Image 1 (cartoon, rainbow, N blue to C red):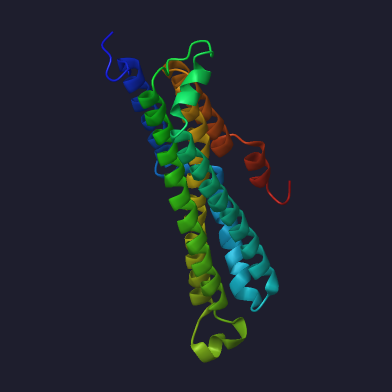
Image 2 (cartoon, rainbow, N blue to C red):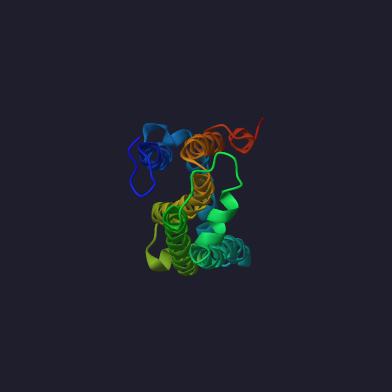
Length: 238
């Protein structure tokens, strides 16, 4: 079998499969006709209900508290990603030690420092992508806080010339922006799962292919078939 710097056609097929599955999952959840059946779409409806409460109850610290809790979660993952990137970059300098360890792992195909470095670089790029998603999500949540603070007060609707329909439209706008920030966060979080699959490439391409498929199944179940989704879809009268 022809090799290129120690990589075989199977390695190339594994990388192609990995990105097809990752992009395909994103499309299925966010762009396809099936997106309305996902947990993200269902929660977007609940976000709209929340934002209608925001504009109807006026100044309330509960909204700021809830929003701050969401932001702290995003900030945690952004900070964690920075530490992970630091560790991975350090791992690039430990190629010889990494290859030596893998020599004792059955089925391992990582036999040179170059192979190790390229495989670790793939993982680094995935986490860099995740960091950008988390950072942008955090910033969007900051903007949303400003928009929540700028929400028209129900008691001033006559003075501002805002009809109930205008208030409803403002709430819908807030909900759409909130869902957008959540989508970026979820995309970054899903990148973590695919990074775990990419880790297995340091063993061999077959394991990489199999774990990528397994990760896709896990994420599919969480998006479309989770117990939480079944419960949240239940009517309040059930």
